[in-house]
Image: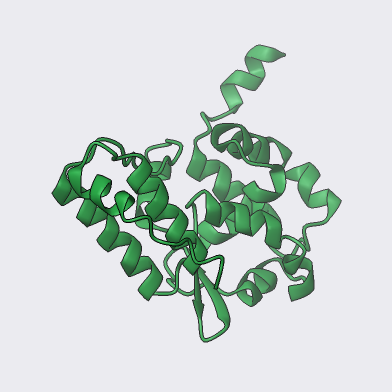
Length: 195
């Protein structure tokens, strides 16, 4: 019986698992029946990316719309034929996807929209787990390139002020070998919490 299973089962990869999750999620309202039918695909994505099953499903829905740089919650709701409220219950999972940089959120004029970064899609295309690039041991020029990227994200409202500050602090902590970082840290800027 195991030999038969091996012959009929294609080798799974991230994109094929995501494709199956999306197919089974259509019009499902994310019912228990959906989770049962999609369980092996959800498990594959969850195991490969260290995500919960709910995060894996949300990520699959975002990947399905990855050609759009402004993905709205209402569009995800429409894809699975459920209310926006049902998707809003998944906001903690969506926030975790954003924290792990698997999706980006734009907070333009109080309206949230999302996009999937190209680097994430490229990693998945190669059946690889996306890992944000390391920012340790940078040169002076590389540090400023990273800072420029962070400021671009902030300008595009894709990260909050607090997230921007945290990314800069982490970047500086990872590159204390640079004289510029040492000089900035020696200035002892206030952290802004006493305002």
